[in-house]
Figure: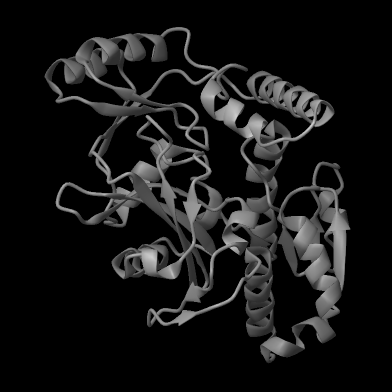
Length: 352
């Protein structure tokens, strides 16, 4: 029996549909209820796609999923997959620990040390908060003066975790321009304002640390590679007009011939070192033209990954087609459950 915490609009929509298609027994659970472990009696796995913009999920998932692992359940995402999720400082340390090719970055927890560094550092640098996605909370810092202002704020009043309603306004206006009709536009604005308020009121202000990443001029794009088990799906993302950020641009290309295979190979190698179930890499181009990792995340827009025109295996052979990433995750869960039970993978549903 596979337990799924259902959040409409998340991976669980597809997990439930795919489980029905396969004939698997699943149990929809509510992880926010105090009796979650009573709900999990008789289950062998727990799937929960939790996201950074839901304060309730951030608070609950980081506590419940490790406990479920200790109980012996197979969970997705497991701790190696998600403990560093939406925490760029944690990602810096993790990538350094496993010797991954990452864009160099520094993190300071002392204001004076950060100010001394800023006086001697070469600019521009990229300032990031630990949290944020879609290019949010990322700024290009061009001078020591700008860096000092950010450092003083970081060790003073801090930053709202989701920024303000008007943060990154150009991107918000571009997204709104794709919506037809006055009513849908109004609803989208209303939902966005509510989301900003929910995150900023539910998560703590970001203060007490400062993060700067090296900046290397890019060729107008980055490469996103998603590793799910033995499969790599990838796309190329152009930078926003007049901006250095690719995340959130909406300018995405899926033709496999656009993806350099050394990026795919590197993604497999690093995913193995991290021992993750599913991980996305945002690759930049390093100073010598080599692929370097800017950020990692187990979460990603599933529709965008479904649009990828196939996947590569570990021998870098490409299989064309479109694949729901949720299905690939679910298949891997079934395979692992079968392995634990000493069964063939295709018997997992019938025996659950």
